[in-house]
Image 1 (tube, helix red, strand yellow):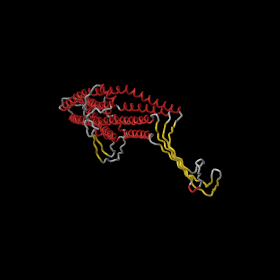
Image 2 (image 1 turned 60 degrees about the vertical axis):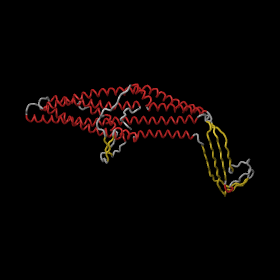
Image 3 (image 1 turned 30 degrees about the horizontal axis):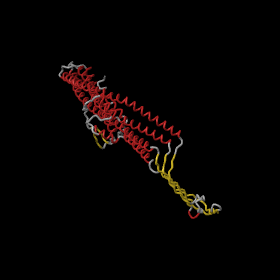
Image 4 (image 1 turned 135 degrees about the horizontal axis):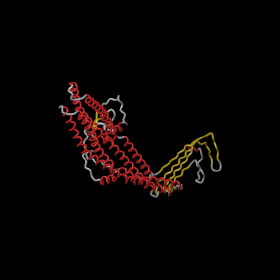
Length: 458
């Protein structure tokens, strides 16, 4: 494996995420900002547009619940008309028309309906609305958990990039001293070194320079990804505050503990449970549509033709649609007799209900497996830190001793080349182990629905 091929593998998440960003090159930064990991997560949760969109889904569900509650309030409808009409006087037996004189016919009709009893219809729909809000809130929490995990990945990747730059600079400094001595010996024609050795060392030096440019780009992309997720404006020059990748302090508990934690706290499970209750309540509510709705009703009907355009009839038994008033209150019921439509609606709701039931069953089987995967990945990363740390220690000693020995004229150029290559491999393994360890904790936190790092406050 190439001595610094690990850099490409190490920063893939940062590069992919940051490729979504667009920062105009002509825009000059006017402000500076640096954030810790906790501050970055806090800002992301407050400003992320994806979370805000999920928040609007919650508001929509709250509006639906408001509509359901409004079903308990009186329904008032008023219709008022002003109709042009010609003059006509008389009574039920005789009348006289005068189409040269016109006036207005005012007609107003108001109905008032106060629901009294609907076989618990309002209770079922209210429960469905409340559980719908709860489900939407949990879906918003699901998106928040994704955002938190993304910020952790990008922040840790940025830290790893800064550490990689330090290691590259250290290696390059030592390699430059070796190249300088090789050139001096070749110029002196001492015979201690060959031109091939100088070519190899200089070629390796140019590779180091290329990798440094790559790490610079990876660092900028990783920090830009953090800024993007944290909602930092593009006119602000952003950088992470903690540039050293450290092993997060974490004590692993039993697998069963985390699996139980996930079943209790995962927003997916809470959303499914709330959604199932809401769908069941909708089915019960739709069933009540097979039955009548009893209500207290009122009717106010008023008609008038000003200026005696139409003669008001004095007898209540005479039909007079143009003048008069009717007011009355009483009990009534409304009954939708399209039972086949109600049955079809119930069938659709049942399909949605059982779909959620099956999703819940699938989640109950899949979530413990997902937790187990995150659990084992953490154990692997934890073990790899010990192996990688020891490997890095040995490779550094080998590299320094080979350089020092060569500096005193008792070393071998090929030994220096091999030590540089092996040190690059050791750096790769160490950064991968540290990065994998911290990200594995983040993955375990996400799969359990609980932040497991007490050091993070957001």
